[in-house]
Length: 491
Ligand code: BG6
Image (cartoon, rainbow, N blue to C red):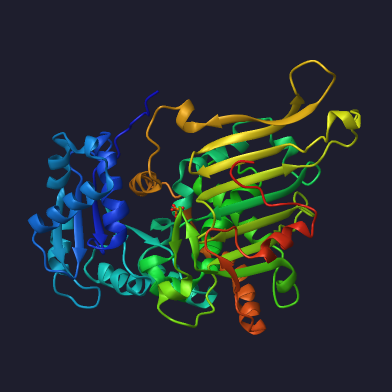
């Protein structure tokens, strides 16, 4: 099976922070892959911008190295590599001063028919100054701007940041990336819900017992400790990725996949989240921080050692029992959990259905377990629907729980594209469906801020957990108090 490739319109993509980590690890490889697949038109141009003094040739060398580091050698054999590198040019410019900007304006302006896209792969405090200069040098008139999290560290700073960007770019030309929305299986969640008549009648509190969303990472914070310590798991993962997943599970069917139709529905979910503050924080949230332990068979240091400090209250693990207060979901808990240095890297959504109302089987048949739909985001993307069947063989009815198991890798023999491949080209296509609107980001902070305040007020340190485990035991207690258990690895 091959994927359908429709080339996009000619564009000029300017990447600010072009020599940084995001550009090297994600943007350059993603653009190359799309080019390799023939989706980038011949005229398209990519301009790297950063403060470093580099020639076009040196920037191409940097990009070539990024390809060597992040793309299998077998995909780098053909003439496509040179064709891709030839698209790249470089301009030295600083967000805070004018030199270089006139040259950038001349390069972008030399292609008046192209769609101008500005990707701000920089620290967020530069978003405002870069947008201002884009405006000042006449680059913003038709341009689209792409920004990434962290969009603020609380509601106040998010409002200020959105305001700065919004002074120059109208909302319909602002693309706020949450790369989880570009993941294949996350988009599949929409296909599963809205392209199958099977699920929608069951997708409510009459039939669903609870939902679990786990985004577990095996890695620690490593060299990102400096940034991470100012954020923590709530800001780094829950405020954005996990709440977006929750929205896609819980939202009403939109009338179309039109960007605002989808985002209106997600916004309603965010606004319906039951507030968590100092009254209920202790009962429904757990935060943790990893200590030294073992991962992938080797000893690994604790968070504080990685940070090089003996004091930090930053959480590397969060579990929350969230509730969506509306008719569809009243009484259905959404258990959310994420953390660094957990037992394995796994992201999945488990939709647990209610038990059968009455069992017709005797005790020899064994328990009748509830159905579960497991949507595996990574690794081994796929969908499992757990059903009860009769264990084959003679000797009466014995029941067993088995999955209808669809692994995407086995079903489709295509490379699973990285989220950025889809998202960058969606910007060129002018499709904002998979990007967060300003009010969504702000609504997410409105829910998160009181939780952070309650944690600060409680003055309790995060609970320790050993690296390589599933987090603090309080997280297990959080769900077991309700008579349920966390499910892992497609179980
Ligand atoms: C980023 C977070 O947004 O997502 C990181 O800042 C995290 O801390 C990463 O590791 C996880 O993304 P993925 O695609 O590897 O699941």
